[in-house]
Length: 97
Image 1 (cartoon, rainbow, N blue to C red):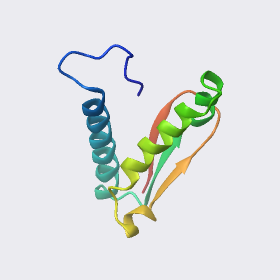
Image 2 (tube, rainbow, N blue to C red):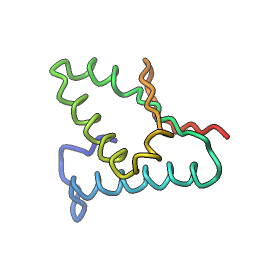
Image 3 (tube, rainbow, N blue to C red):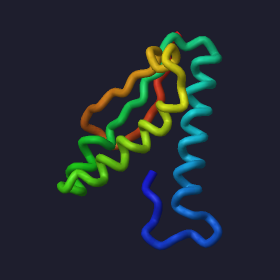
Image 4 (cartoon, rainbow, N blue to C red):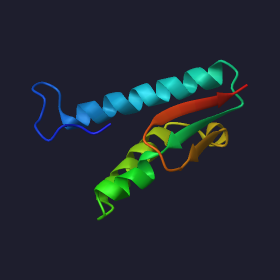
């Protein structure tokens, strides 16, 4: 989820984030449309980000990115979404039928 420090020619950092957000929204919507009662984003990067960036800026960036995804859902949909924070190193979408 972290864009390299050197810009990828023809693919801006903002375009990367937009694509990431679009794909995250798509995955969540597919879960909901397939009948999932709720969808959980497992945000393990939260604690890990503080280990590699004690200033907290990386954590703020990750939270902002997650909020950009969650803002794409309406009030009723947001009540079916959850964010779980735990120690770990991976990012998963869980769905419950």
